[in-house]
Structures are given as structure tokens and as C-alpha cells.
Amino acid sequence: MRVALPAAMLLWTATLACGPVEGPPGYEEEPASQRQAARSTNSETLNGLAFNGLAFNGLAFNGLAFNGLNSASFSAWFQQNDSLAEMVMRYVVTCAVPAGETRTYTDAQGNTYVWQGSLGLAPDWASGQPATLREQQLVSACLAAHVNKYGRTVAISILGANARGQPIPTSRAELLEFSQREGCFFGNLFNGEGVYAGNDASLLGWIRSSVRACALSGRSDACPPITPIGSCAARCTPDPTNTYYTRCTHGGITYVPLTTRIHPQDIYRCGDGTCQFTESCGLGVLTAQCILDCGICF
Image: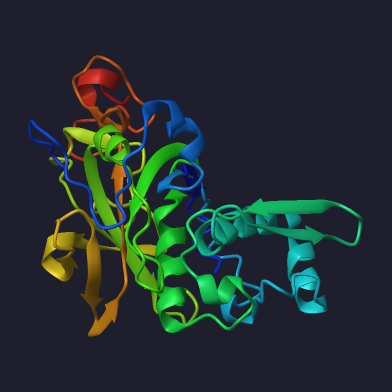
């Protein structure tokens, strides 16, 4: 499934060699003719969560019961800002609820919202039970992974396992298509520990910029409230296939992370002759400045 989150929503709450590509646990081969239909059940998703969505935390995640969306507390929270709340819930359900399931809410005005499940990272929470610590961490990581600094909808691939240790199904075709490693995301929005992003590749300073930015830039001001932690490899443990990370440690706390991959074309190079929206005029001192493509600022 493909998804993209603007950075605000977070506040709320490989190089491939020649030859066959080995898939991670949960890897599923699929005929090309079936791939389009299968996209809603694998790890492809669209990032687009806004930063202010993460800040919109009037209802704590651990107070949200998926079998009680029509409760008075949920309705009061939703009505504070229904457009932002709708976006937040869209991504929460995408992350927590299994593919093939939906969650429906009808507001006081009679408007009905239907949110589609996809990744199924929190099966217990999705069934109406309190979110476990592992589920809290995974849903937090998933929301962070879906944030997009520029509010753009960009296809990404999310790799990892759900709270029961079952790998997110990932096809060989998906690994080939999303061949650019991006980063790792982890944290806990439920208890206020924050969310973090590490890079799994380098943008080489000002030479390259990313349409995603949060993981690869490594800048502290890139995607607040997401905190950059540098290299994923320095803080995280990979799975046996080195396809995704199974745990990351920060501040003495160990988290269950999610790993992301993107399309190579979603990284722009300063000097390609096009002034991209991720670049600006300047002297080339900062990542966003590209005098070669955008000229000198006056």
C-alpha cells in the first residue's frame, strides 16, 4: 500500500546486485498481472501526513479504542478540527488495522468517514484491546514514516514486522522498484518519548536533496518534532537479510522500528539543470541551496 503524511500529523499523537533478489521474511513472489491488486496488502504506502497532525493530540492514543469511535470523548476530539482529525485517523487506521478491514465514524452532522486498514501493525489494539508497548512503538514509527516535510504525496515502501513479529508482506518487485534505502523511524507518541528518524543513506551534503527530507537530511530543523539521530546502522540491529531493522536504541530505551525505501527518482541532484521545489537560490552552503540550478539570491 502506498501512503504519505504531512509533518503536522506526527505531532498529533540498496543497492541491488545483478542476479535474483532475496526477499526478507514475509517475502511474497507475485505475478506481474496481480501486482496492482496486491498493493493494498503489501508494504507500499503513500506518505503525506502533516506536521500539525502530530501536534493535534487532544485525544491520547492510549485512550482511543477502535471499537468505540462513537464515544463522547472521541466525538469531542474529532470536532475540534474535523479535517485534521480525519487525516490523523486515516493514517492511524492505515498503520494499525489489517488490510481488508475498515473503521467507520459518523459525526454529529451526519457525515460518515470510512478509513481503510493496511499494514496491520497493531492487531490487538485494532481488535479493541489496549495498545501494547510494542504496538505503541510501531504505530508511532509508522506515523513518523508517513510524514512529508513538503506536504507531498510520495510513494514509499515500509519494511518491518507487526507487534506479533509477523513480517509485513513485501514482494520482490517492490524491493526492485523501491531500490533506494532511506531510513529508520522509531519512538513512542503514546507516552511522550518522542519520535526519531535515522538515515540509511547519505545525501552528500548540499549536492542532493530529497522530496521526503525527514530521514535523509539529518538536519535538526528538517522535520520537527521528529528528532534526527544520524546513521541507522549505528543505533539499530538489522534482520538476518539486512533488509530492515528489528530494534533501535536511543536514550537507553530500545524501540521496535520501521524501515523505509523510496524510488531513486525521488532524490534530486543539484546541477541537473532543474530548480526543484526542494532547492533554492543561494551559495550551495546548505542542502536546500543550489546556485547551479536556482541561481544566486538577491
